[in-house]
Image (cartoon, rainbow, N blue to C red; front, side, top):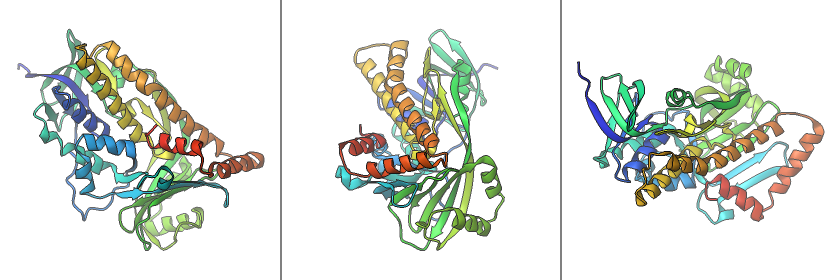
Length: 395
């Protein structure tokens, strides 16, 4: 049987938050774009429970979503602005960041990952040059004279000048291209716990460091919050076996006094902590974005924000190549994309590693030194403002 071929300028494997954002941004450049994804996002209904997978979307990411037309759709669903960020280990030694320090209304929003994806997918219909193959999976990839040929499990064959891998940490695109990774497992896991609270909606996200890992709170819409519990893999595995009442008792024992104890556990999930960084972000006619290129310790919630910065950079270099009539799928353009993103991603990953290592012990001299550092960092000065701007993607 003769297979049907479809020609596209760009084929993106993976329609999650990063892949969907890339699809819209590249379609806005007038290119023919295809997205291959195995599952469509579930429609939104207000009565649906809040998903445990949430992200702290930075102001820079909000700006990108606005340019892609997805921000208004997202605000029509549910989210919560956070206006403060606080970190401490010992009581009295705290670093506090506030939106007012930058004369901003907020530092970002806490949003369910699936709603960010859905808001982006809702924009697909606005572009005649954006095609979605869903449900579909890649069956085979082969190089062709003008790019890459992508065979799908539904029998379709897509021909593209550029293949974009936005297919997550275990990226099939990255593996097929022979792009190696460096990294390690942190020997820790992370548990996400949604709770229903009696206190009103909060607007400060906080994190206390312990030798076993941080204990964090992220505000959620309404009288809800997300608790984040980092610990060794066995402890998290044991916590997963507890019912909601038992898990609340464990939280009461291990979380700081700042957490209002009038709450109920609603839902939970967990994942291992790993660090992965691709040795390069491109090959001939191919680039990788987001988790396919890098996974980061989630201490500062920067994972998806780094992915959105990848998207922004790729759109920018391809747009620049179009203006000068260059072949935007060739190596010089793809090298520019890597140049724009490599150092920034490496810097953020290394910074999170240093934070993780610096607080993962209970040696008294080190403990005192790092807490004095947190105290000093709390003074409002140009350095503190610059760090905050960088974390928000504004510097």
